[in-house]
Length: 188
Image (cartoon, one colour):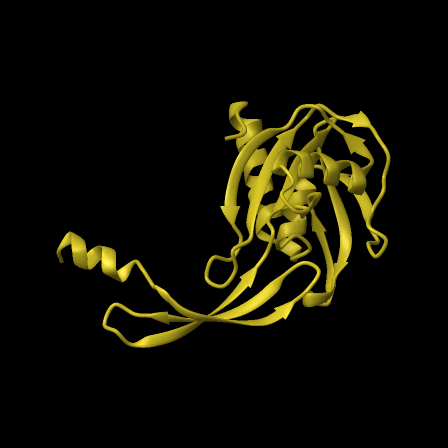
């Protein structure tokens, strides 16, 4: 296949966009796109402002929050995280969410990775940070957020994963990054 043909299959020009829903956190649109052979198809796209999350270690334990997740109809144990507000800097959002959800703050965040959470249908990009430099702050969760704050060991984290109590990608990735950190002294 020529370089031109390879480039053509990696591009889907937008013919039209139909807004479907505009919410507080996400919007949904249906794009009609043109395929390389001239046919059209549709793509359902969720737009999201992005998010930030923190691998926060306190005395060698991972700070997590246990909360009910309506889409899954069950509680989940997750690392502190939240959406970016407007054009908020992801590092500032990570620091804000850490303090709001756990009551700890930090002046030392290191970017571990930035990744798309579900690129097949959403543009949400999540920025994952690390800190082991924590100071007491003030818990201030969102008004509709009920959280139980925990500090867990690696063994507890692995058990929660096996039980399905930890099953979101960001927290699983955080646990594997933590394991790497414990074995190599490097977080990335």
